[in-house]
Length: 148
Picture 1 (spheres, rainbow, N blue to C red):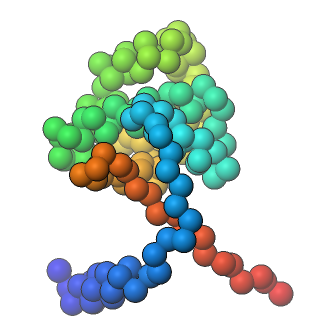
Picture 2: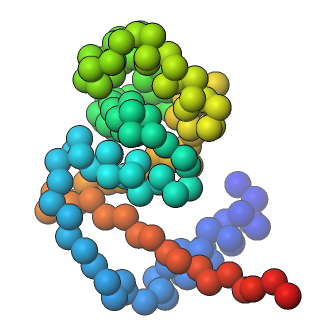
């Protein structure tokens, strides 16, 4: 690893420690299944998703999370996730026909939610379950300077 990269990581780590504690904390009681659905609903302003697309992608995200507990290699994880077994599971869970599933998947590919390698990495929540059974997600709002 080069020294510039190491230095950037150290500076980033220091900046995280210096950030103020969150001043608005909301507790949301949810199941794991609903967490991924709410995550997709949160993404809706950034990625245009229909209700059915949210159902399908949240099901894939939940399956990916479950598979990630036993598969650590991202390439193997994505291959397993996009395999026929998982797709059939998603179809059954979402209660849609195979034809409708293909239409939804086509739309998700057009919107860059699904890529050639799997789910777009930017859309996968980086969650770790805490000892108290909670997931925490930090959302930072950065003020943009108005262009003149």
